[in-house]
Length: 451
Image (cartoon, rainbow, N blue to C red):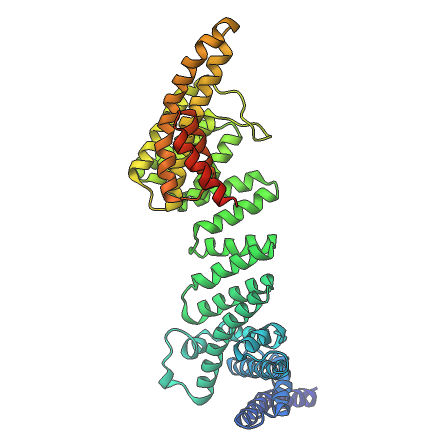
């Protein structure tokens, strides 16, 4: 038994040395390959390096060492680079422009080797954070790095840039799902090495996921930005829309509530939240919600605009077919409230030109609709005897509202001079108020636009 134990103990150093020699052999072959790069890269050296490092990483003695994983990262990245350049050479026959050729090669070159290189970089951080920080982290000092460490540092930085290039190449090839993944990988590599959040790359991942119409990726990447505390309003908008498409109104409303807390003045989130309240018969909640926001930010034109819209929507309800339905009993009060908040928004003059246009247009439409409602209601109450005698009177009363609408439509038109909806509304109002010359002028302009 003692002899067996002695033999077993005696073999352990040999096994350990054998595995360490695999790491050394991988390093030697990698250096041999790198020495051929200036003339004619000899891929056989690189394949030998890969074979040895794979054996070393398959063994418990060496798989969790920073050195073995550092060589793995360099070897696999060099292998990816070799295949990338070979692919570029193949494309010379069909793509003459060098930049276009490089972009195309990012699409067609297999990414598995690059993926392994990235995994090895992550593994270094996992098994030896001190070494990672010294060579790749924010506290590194390049002048203190040895030759191998400097090569690892340069390779990792090149990989960080390459991930972004691959993402752009995938995007231009309209492979939006892949582009989303690579923008995300690029952002994560940047975070790993610099401890800075690359907001642009994370957001690009979200945009690409939407273009790919990939439900799971849209939710994942947008939620990542929220969890990393770098969210923008569009993150909540995208998640909300996904839940609406999935008919999950509960999660959609939860998303809106979170978004509204973080971005209380965002027009989309605000409108959607009030829409949900209105659609579920909770108009008062929508109004309370907006009034609280205005109390905190009384000079906010957008908030006033949205509150005016809420009152306007309640005053002029529409059926499922989109057509007007019966006006509420407090129609006059609601219309007055809508007008009040629209006017405040106009006076505050929103910075966003589209919002300013919409406020002016909606205020004009509010007065126009009020005139139509007044005329229709008066005519409906009239007897046949009174109808002819009173029609002119009703028209004059309605015209007062039409005249109030005209200046707001005219101001809206000064912002968007060829908006056909505004032009059509003005044409009708000019004719209704007896300004035939102006009506004809607008009519001619509409014909010119519609040619």
